[in-house]
Image (cartoon, rainbow, N blue to C red; front, side, top):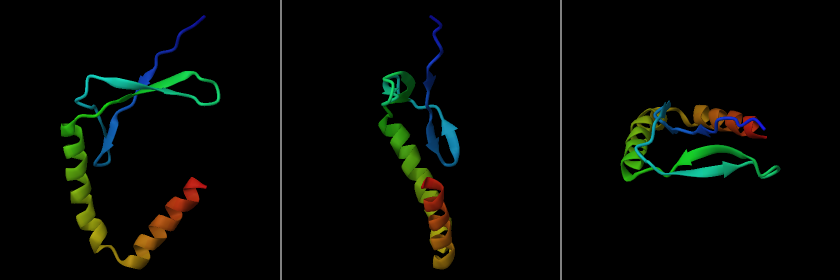
Length: 82
């Protein structure tokens, strides 16, 4: 039986994949097969603070975006999800 390496997912913060400061992870299983497909970090307070800071910075530009343009972006995102 071959064993494949399980990917540890990074945090997506400020448009970049960032390694978590956490040393603990949690397994992620494929619900259809029960196969272990990834590990996710149990993010730390510092990770969350970094994400909140990045979100606050991003919001400054988003808030200046005209409402019709924001609506188009969100509807496009919705179409990508379904």
